[in-house]
Image (cartoon, rainbow, N blue to C red; front, side):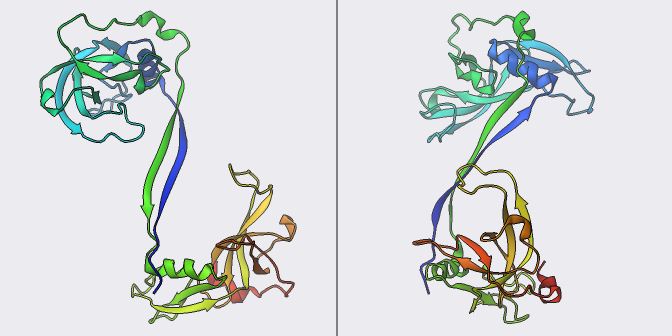
Length: 314
C-alpha cells in the first residue's frame, strides 16, 4: 500500500463588504479616535454598536460616544500569537466594558504576563499610529495606571469622509491528508493511470475513490483502472480569467465520465473551439512533461456517446 500523503495547504481570499450607517459611523469614529456605541430604547449602550436590539429586534441608530477607558470583565492568555493577530508577543484576549457602555468589546491587552491580568482591572485604549477606519485602529488595550487618559478625538469630524466599506482578508492554514484511497489515486496518476475503487455491494466504481461507497456506506478496497478516455457529461464556459492561472478565456471546464467509472470527474477541455464542446463529446487526457495530472482533455475523434450511456452520471 502506498504511503498516505499529506501536504500543507492555504485557503486565502479578501472578503469585501459594505457597511450600514451604524458600522460606518463606528469605524469612522475609530479612525478619528472616537469610540461610538448605540443606545437602545430602554437606555442601554451597546459597544460594538449593532443595527438591531438583540433583545427586542428593534432597529436602533442613536449613536453616542463612550470613554477610551474601561474594565476587564473576563480574559484568556495567548501564549503563542499567530500571524495577523494584534500583537506579536504573548498577550491577553480581554472583554472590556468601556466606561459608558453596557456591553463588552473583545480585543487584545498588552501585559507582561498572565500574572499581570485580572478580572476587574482598569485598562485604556492604545491607538494605532496610523488609522484607516478598522477595528485595528485600536492597536490594543494597556493597563490604566491612573495617568492622563488617551486624548479623545473630535466627534465633529465623523461626518467627513465616512468609511463605507472594508476588506477583511480571510485565510486558513491547514495540513491536508487525502487518506488511503486518494493517496493510491494520486500515486497512480504519477504513472499516468487513473484508478478508482469498486463498491462490493452496488458494484459502482468511484473516481476519485473516497474509501467508502457514498450510496451503500460500506468500505471500498477493490481498485479498478478506468479510462483513459471518457465522455463529457456536462460543462460550463469560463469567461473570467482567474488570478495566477495562465489560461486564456473563454475556455471550457467539464464533467468527464471516464470509461468504466460511475462518477464523473472534472477537467478542462482543449484542442477544440469552446463553442464546439458538447455533451456526449468523447475525450482523452493530454499530459505535459513532469505533470502529476492531465493538463486538459481533447476530442478523440470518435462519434459522440449516446445520451442514454451517460445520463445517470449528470
